Image (tube, rainbow, N blue to C red):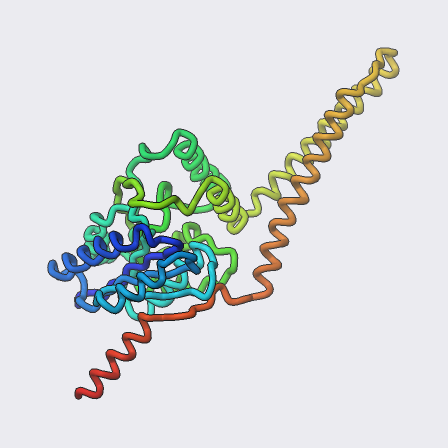
Length: 330
């Protein structure tokens, strides 16, 4: 088996504070992997700039000129982490035998990447990086995350617990992933659906190198809800069930009120009436909101708009230039 060409895809959004250190660590890793004959010397690191407002892209361009491992992909605007990652994966798939995705803050441990490659050599098409424990998380984040994975499993959505987007995918696994054309992208749910041979590598998550997390509580909740509604109609069924249960309870309460009326035990029920009105009204608004969320997703899907636009692709341009120069020499 020939040594595989590896591309490490790194989505970036306002990462100027960590970029230099991230590039150095990943470049050192690439040198070690090539020296140990695990990957081809044509392997690269692809930084994807997701419409950063700081100096991230200029740093990527400069590093690309000076570092033979580094390539850059600049998106025309900010499209979000999942689409930026997909853009990098799609570009890398054209040049690579396998691709590893990792966030720019390097909280995911790059020291397990050699083990990723070994699993690939053994025949795994997908290698998931899975957190061994969540001791660095707050009590709230740790328990809400575990609750999320359990809930997703209950409603039939296949996820790998404690896995984010740190994974290796073979070329053929990537080709299958790219057949999914939906606009409501949730890669952590899509990748397990591919079905090719997969395995897991466990690691301890580190502290962020610098800067702030790009996933505060608000974004994490939105991301979780997007994952649920992208793969399951369980929320609508839940509202339907609660509505049906509410109707039964209302019928029982109505029968009880009629019986009490005939027995002459009626009393003014202002509080219970107001509570029931607010309960039913809230339930209706919740149901409308959830249905609206699904309709909104359908609206985005049927328009079939491009998921991202590439402004600059240093990977493909530099490769074509290199091929041209080699042809001229011959």
